[in-house]
Length: 84
Image (cartoon, rainbow, N blue to C red):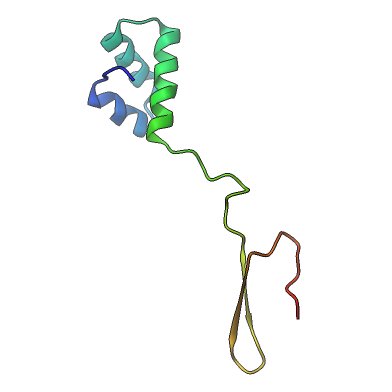
């Protein structure tokens, strides 16, 4: 990515989109469309992609047995009941 002032990163991280785009235009001497594209590119670099649903860890089920022990069941699919 082209060299941008540090203040652009601060503006992006703090949600000041319009100010960040304005500073990108001034620093790069580009059109509004190009500045918005650069903004989105930099935003993606500063905010990592969320974990996809397929990669997300499965929920855990915690269950106390009658004898007082704790059983932890991991990796259950949605709606799946633990085996007894």
